Length: 231
Image (tube, rainbow, N blue to C red; front, side, top):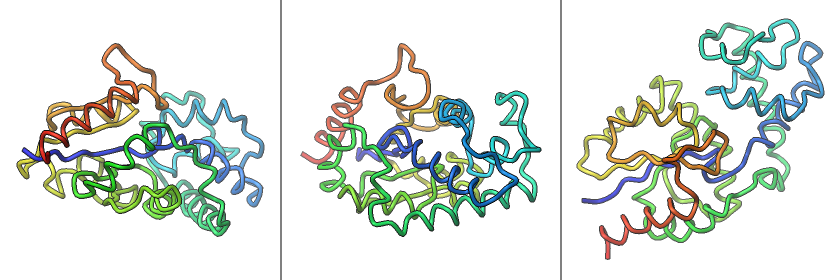
């Protein structure tokens, strides 16, 4: 049985939170209704509950701040949130004009371990991320890890969730042994009864548990699946 390996991007391949923080700060400097100088620690706490860029509006817009970040999941996006999202991606696109933009991303050692396998077995991997496709593609190209299919925030909005993207593309019913690797437990939970194996990345942004995998453990497991299937 051939493996199909679904990989999250932020918190699995790259520590990219600082890049998102820089985009928000860049945006805030251009728009007086947004807070400037948000502390990175506050940003990271908020980010741990975030699933879409529009939600940053509830951290940055001065008159729409949440009194409890744990309520973020219950907030429904409105026109102001979508306007923030539009400005966010415009700001990122502007920043990406810098040829060194991808240096804002910090690759985990896991990326360098996995990179030879990405090149050797590109058909076995897919990126499934809440980040937008263009920034993922640019980053993977910069770090010479491109060539695999990318499904990003645009696809999640279209199909409702990461699981919705997987079902739409029939990844869960094509006869493959499906493994999903993510650092966020809340993203893994919907997949637990849908795929053959969920791997929680202990090195990402969410808290690790007794069942979490280290970078080395996750790599050797993935490498083993590919060896059994192709060698």
